[in-house]
Amino acid sequence: MQLVFFHHAGGSSFSYIELAHKLSAFIEVYCLELAGRGMRVTEPFQVDGEIVLSDILAAIKQLRLGEDKPLLLFGHSLGAELAYQVACRLENELPEKQLALVISARGFNDPEGCINKPFEEYSDSYVLNILEQCEGTPANVLANPALRNYVIKTMKNDLILLDSLSRLPKAKLNIPTCVIGGDRDNRVSVSRLAEWSQVLPVPIEQQIFTGGHFYLFKNNEIVSWIEKQARKLAG
Image (cartoon, rainbow, N blue to C red; front, side):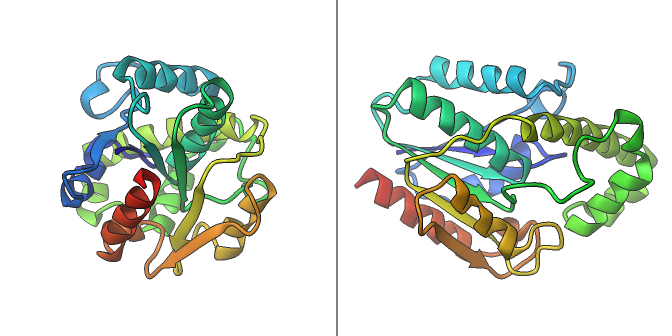
């Protein structure tokens, strides 16, 4: 059984290491690393959705993920948009793969005014406001000028990437998919999660956990829930 975590905007693979270590050994865990951060910090950021998706698909092919084991794609926030688009392409190109998807803390569509923004409108104050709403960045990080500037730069690039991804067509998926989120998420309401029914088999499987936008790092129930989904896929 293989699992790939797709990280959130402003995040990196490091954000998911602790969660990965809590999972049972029967799950092979891989963590996506977008360019410009973490182990790829020397690479330039990439904001073109199609290029990023091609890069991810090439990595999946190189690692031979899903070739002889079930593959679960778990995307959180920005990562959910990436995981969904990757799942669509894998289902279309390699229908024989045993594939499942988890969409976490990501609405089907963005609210009016949150997308199609020119780069100059992603001001520092706009990005900081989003970070405060999500409640996922430690106060001591934002209090440090160097760290704050790095976080803002990464977040700006990821928001532009998300805008690029949001313009792509959303195809119907016919693989096992769960839509999950936090009951106190200030960015993504439960009703917005439910809108994924437009491209998923109805009724969609939905699970709401206690917590905000980053509930998965603070709610211990998520570990047993992921393992349950993994065992279900593995049969």
